[in-house]
Image (cartoon, rainbow, N blue to C red; front, side):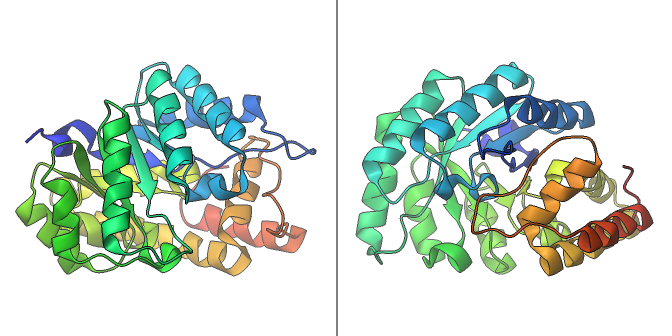
Length: 297
């Protein structure tokens, strides 16, 4: 079995999509976002996932975003292309495009909405693996997809070395730990930012998260502190991140994240409707919370 855990471990911002006033992709801002995080030392990027508003974008826009990120990244960090869709044909099209444009891995959420049985979901993922010469990362997010897996179901993917591992956006850390026990060379990414320290303490190889867009240094710091046995420092950084996350939840996670990046000088614009805009009062509260929790603007 290939050692995906060693090859892909680390911190991967789930990139936001910046838009201009006409709700078109702001290429310059996206390049700024990639460069800022490369300068911070992230190990890779998760492109066109939930945070990118992927399910509200056209296939053409999803391809364009990947092309911009790959070009700006220029091989410096790993790229995981999220190609998830309800349609298998669409997911395969996006996966082939990702391979042609230098992605290191493809990932997909489970096809949702229609309540597909597991045999159909398994067929979807295996068709995706058959369509490209890239490893596949299963995106497990039961709260949003409505699809729950057992450990036995996860093993039906990880027994095939074309499947690199799991993006584990769930709080069942026993299941996460058991995946690592059974498949230590599979990469397991923690998904919930507020539980990052919990995830790595139970064996996660790193994380994919939306708040990494603007405070990747906190999660890099948590990983480093944990690795070196400095649990009090790791907790301090996690608690600071969580204080900020509590405000994001209050004001709308992705719109608030874009507002924060605007404060940092990257013109992110608004999220696509029906996402709401962030008020000036909320922006002031976010700014104060960031500064009081060790973030520089």
